[in-house]
Image (cartoon, rainbow, N blue to C red; front, side):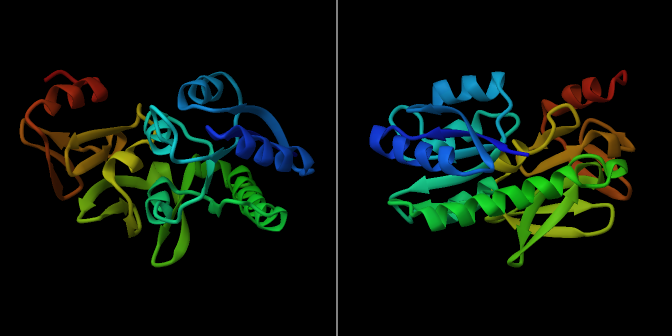
Length: 232
């Protein structure tokens, strides 16, 4: 099995360098290399892309802007000449963060991480359905999407509430929202995202999941009613 890869960098030399490393790796297949976010987004929408080698500072739209515009994201390995963005990269559940110039050995280690993550997702129990990995307390945790009840803002973190436990993750609400299936999760408040399947009842002010009342923004009752396919 090989991972389908896309390389994104506005520098032609850097793009060629990473593309060469991809082509030389036995577990990778290069399906495209692009200098901007627009062409990359179009490729991801029309091709099966498993792994993205992504530069951050690009004209018009940055690498982060590209990811913010994607409903479903491939695995991401950031490639940058600066370390300033390393912390923010964790908001996007990056597999790794490579500093330019990239050595073959460091590249191979990053690819190994991506390959192992891909295998874990592929081999996950079918009865549990889709899942994601999050980093909490310096550890990676597998969370099945069907078990997430709601997500709430918690300062610079988010708190993910599941059927069994909670996880505090360094991320923004906007970034994590992009990791979730849009047909099953709804942002009902600036500080809350809920799993539609977990809602027991709702009114004009709250959605209730078990004994927890989650506030609804003024214009979200109608959106929730439509999502639940219930009359208001």
